[in-house]
Length: 182
Image 1 (tube, rainbow, N blue to C red):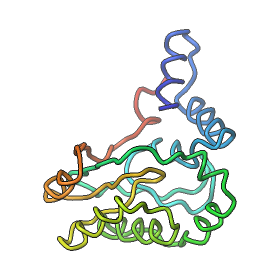
Image 2 (image 1 turned 135 degrees about the vertical axis):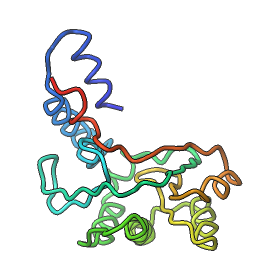
Image 3 (image 1 turned 90 degrees about the vertical axis):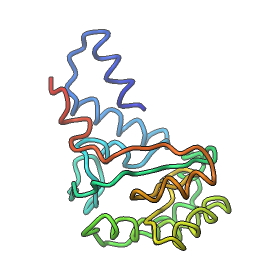
Image 4 (image 1 turned 45 degrees about the horizontal axis):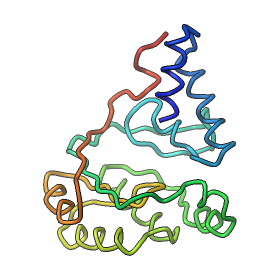
């Protein structure tokens, strides 16, 4: 990730950059080169987020109640820059956004899935996995922006493994900025 790369450069060359400064540079770089739009802010302090205003210093509501395992499966790249440079895709994404904050992990996956559906970015393979998860009442959505699925709970790895290699993770309780303060 760009955050990790900038942190390494700062440490190797003893630049003494704060994690907050590294995050701001990473955010500006992603926006300038259209390789991301908000990933840095999401990674900064852990949990899952709901944005109320744009930008790295925007109003963000964080929740830390996602305690079950998160499983992912990926089917190759979805070029972020291609999507972010496409005015029609960006218009669909803008129209898909709902000003609603999740109140629970299940709510997070519901809102995320609705956004993925309404954005028009779901590939056939992602749709197949999402439909299988829905049949089994497993909260799941499309990775943003990616050609993959992330799903919640103990039953998710068994379903996702039918479609590819499963990667397991958990919600970070603190994220990038609150770790290793300079």
